[in-house]
Length: 513
Image 1 (cartoon, rainbow, N blue to C red):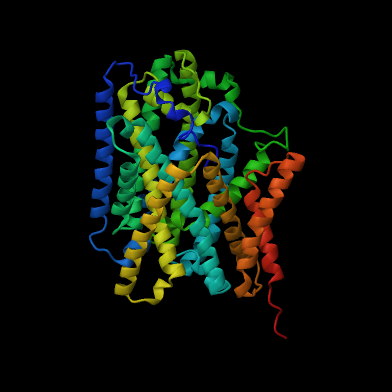
Image 2: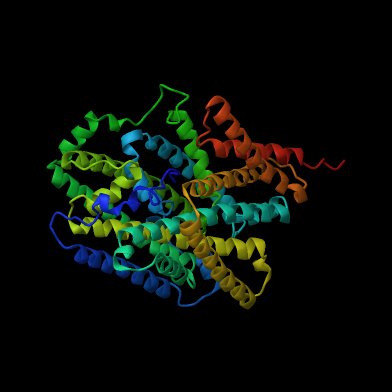
């Protein structure tokens, strides 16, 4: 659920003066507005550290990796509602309404089907195997090389996405707040990274679950308050809003008329199923929360409720987008050149009460930092268990390995954020997201081949099709784009997975006579 076109940080938002960010309808001074937002942000960051400390009175490895499999479903469920959402989703979905209407809900239907497949197909398998890392399945099914290959592809995709998310929140906070009070970007990025390290250092996935609770509440509060305020400013009742939406061209949901369109129902629906399985069911970051539940039944109940809740939250974000455009038109605001600028522009500089701007900044920080913290936990788990074979170590040695790995992963993220700020341009950032899209294909192909067949493969060569498939698809995608103007959309992951499965079939072992 990530929009790869959200790169407004380096472009239009640098023109802060043109956006008139700190002009509020109630005429409160710029300095007071900054102080209120800064106080709210500091309060949230302190709360993160307190929760991280209280959730981990003991720093055991089992607590860090799986919360000792003692989490009740009613604890995990609210945390999972926004677990797959980051600050990118928070600002991207509302802005997409002008161009795409509500067609994203077609993919949400696919997400729902994918959630059911994860709950009743993958979860029983993972629970029976008592996995700490999902990629241990590849070791049991094919061998050590497959295990490490799968973990490496997860590491690359999650590290790239996490670095961009952390950079995004640091850059937005810098432009909206810290630049105005004289704090340099390096200090800002260091503080954001240190917060993610601090609240996950001891509690791991348990801290992530509790902070995801806070993230869900703040996101819903930011969206809910903004919707209520916009309805008041528009002088609309709920009935009036519903009627205006029904009459608007933005209300379109289903597209069955043009199979070549990237919004065509069956393309989006099927892509939603596959993306959910690959980017949730086979993602250590998200599944680590589910594996912390007490039983298979708890996990399945949690996933089903999460699917329903996420559909509601996404619908609210799209509805918010409709109201933002309606308000911008009524208030005479100049629409931003990029749709992702809409929410921050209206919330912080659109003449709304200060509480809307404060909730936007804190809600954005919460969704971004929480997702980075959970990714940091997952990266630490995967590297310790999959690459370093940490489960073969005794408790004290594994504890040392895990702490060192957690620290190194934090430093790598901080280094990537600085690199993005001082050396990257928009094309480099796009490249990171394209790489993240490619890396999930080999993972999906390896898991599907293992689940759908009984064939054994030559494990030592598994890395070859896993590496070749993205390279082939990259060349093919560029050729189709330049030669025939054909764009491969969300289904790219499916093609990568199919190529990997063909490669694994070619590596199959002949049965022993």
